[in-house]
Length: 270
Image 1: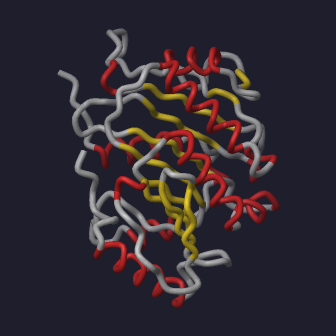
Image 2 (image 1 turned 45 degrees about the vertical axis):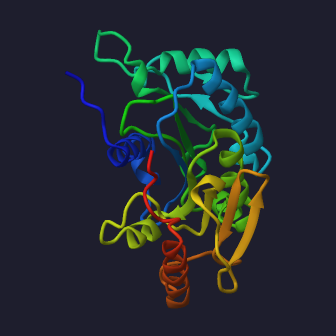
């Protein structure tokens, strides 16, 4: 019998999988990621592909490093390099169809969704990777779009700014319609996740879908911005958020407390 992973374990497994695509010498303690998460939603390979096309086109507008992607073959490490840019529905539909979950040599498990992994053309410190998991509708399962960014170097300096990170989160929000999304460092995530608070992290940049609730007034220098009619973006600081700055940590805890009061940090009911 095939077990269905919980939403939390599905997210952790996907993040571990994509981190394994990063060469060892490129993995640093304070690496950054952008992730969008949503609950069970049945979608066909073509529907996932249309969302993927919208996302990749939008993401490419924010930095040259995010404008070149190649599909990670399945089985991993085999097959030819397959460029995904410029994205088209037919190519991504085929990629999602190949990314169906299945037991080795067995039938496809449609309810566990479809996955496409990708990497950019960068080498060493210019390397980035991407995972798009869509169409899972099994009870307790989840879907996600997860982007791992370079940890250091010129590209990292460009990417780790509010305009680029908020742009990447907006791209995810518009294309995938997630429940929530976040851009943050892993050290910040580990700090925010202490005590097993639940599913939702508060990052340097955080997005909440409108269905989750209304974002309350928040203290300066936090910025609150609408994302069309879909939801709300929260940007904690105009400068790079760091866990080594006590003022940043105190601000994050205060904002989390205010969001918790209105139920935005609670687990989704679906």
